Amino acid sequence: MPFQFNRMAQQEAEQIAFTWLYDAPYDFYNMEEDEEDLAAFLDDKERGEFVFSVKDGEELIGFLMIEHKGDTVDIGLGMRPDLTGQGKGVTFLKAAMSFLRKTYEPKQLTLSVATFNKRAIKLYKRMGFHTSHIYIQETNGSTYEFMSMVFDCYKSE
Image (cartoon, rainbow, N blue to C red; front, side, top):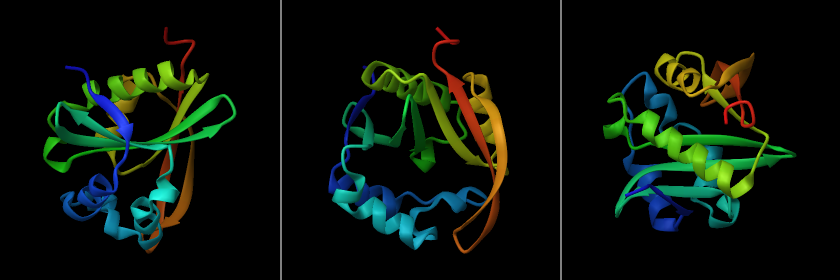
């Protein structure tokens, strides 16, 4: 059964925010690490039509956040902690990319990832994303280095 992408319900947002806890160093991605991000994630109006729960059957396995920027869709995504590091990211990311391409028809997909997250960067490169630039951003009470990555939808068909 293919993954289902639906507008995120409040119960799903709360489940992700308060029960999805990643082990170090990925605990950086725990929702409670950034109060502003947590508040926005928990606010139905802030999530709007652009935050999706991802289910495999009835099982909540991930989330996908999008922001339109012209012909580009910027994405943020996460998998349930117990599913990470097992090679399941390829299937998850392929499904997300297919959903985005069919639903929004972007020319490009972009994302940002903390540069310490070698596991995710390896996946993104494997799926056809390339590095755009590196930048520094304040978040989670400190300053971190991030990598901006781009996927050209038309080159990859």
